[in-house]
Image 1 (cartoon, rainbow, N blue to C red):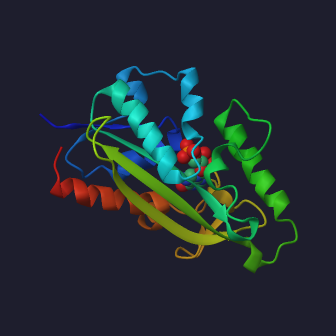
Image 2: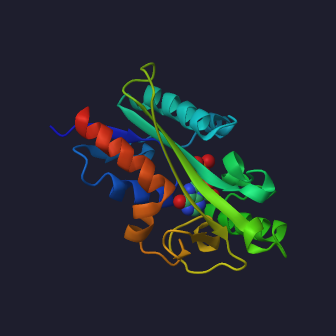
Length: 209
Ligand code: IMP
């Protein structure tokens, strides 16, 4: 029987990317909805840690307990160097007040970031995406950590409609275009998440579930 891997994210943009990134791994990928795990109020507090790894670890432990399968969780975000690393671990809820609808929240986050950078020259718009991924065989097992990052700058206006979140305003150094303009394959080849999951997939190949 194909081993199953639980992936602890509800974000549809992340789910789409992670399914593709793990397409060649010898496991069946399951998300919370596939296990009938609907969102609970206590999930809101899972992302209060001060680091991507800390947040990923809390999500992995929480969901590994509920799902009772080997679990991988990721936490990610964007850091603008001239803003002292903001939005960072607060990327998901950067714009205030919080919006119920994820797409509205993403758009508000982009507007907030653009406003904070109005008039900033290119060198003050440098940024990177970061992704930390924590794998747990069981909720109380040794955590395995994988990371990825990619650099670029924040554009002055959104460009392209691909990806999700900050992608239309993130110009990738490596692709020479925004993640909003990139195909899914192009983004996966250089993105923070693509790199973290490539490292995880290589590890999985050596440590089958
Ligand atoms: P979290 O990891 O669920 O806390 O959410 C991460 C947040 O960072 C997302 O809601 C997005 O706003 C942003 N983010 C992380 N990765 C990406 C990406 O690949 N593209 C665009 N935005 C991202």
